Length: 174
Image (tube, rainbow, N blue to C red; front, side, top):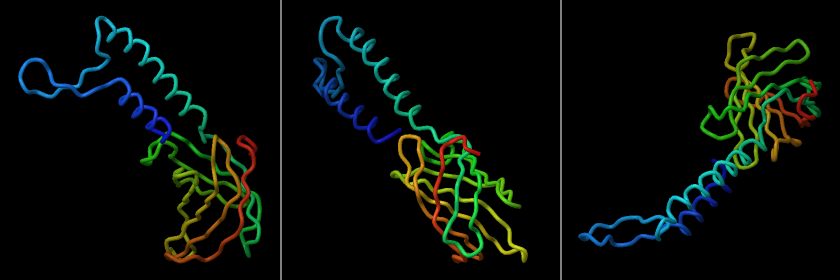
């Protein structure tokens, strides 16, 4: 759930709910939309509004698709690649999921991505010639379903081996 939707829900809760003592006993209860017959009408109006606003917020910023990415200012990794993202929310954040990379003599099918605070981070598993753990990390600013410029980092044995600048193209461009 995005921050804007959470704020909207909190404001609606504050607006429509009030904590009050029930007439019977000393129990504290929450009374929604107090008044005669207004409860059901208000709920019938509120629920579709929340569904529509939630669907609009979630649907307007999907990052699923194939994204062309160009690495520059790198010693050995300069070139064009294609990163495929499946935005299904499966990695603890609303915009997260599986990732893979293809390019010149490169096929890395196992990776993940997360979009946190406007920053997309794609992490791809790689294996070195010696069997040492290795991976590629791409990070770029993201917003409203588009990706911007960022960085590339190749990690080998837990340390940075190589880095470069990254520019993402339009979704569907590869």
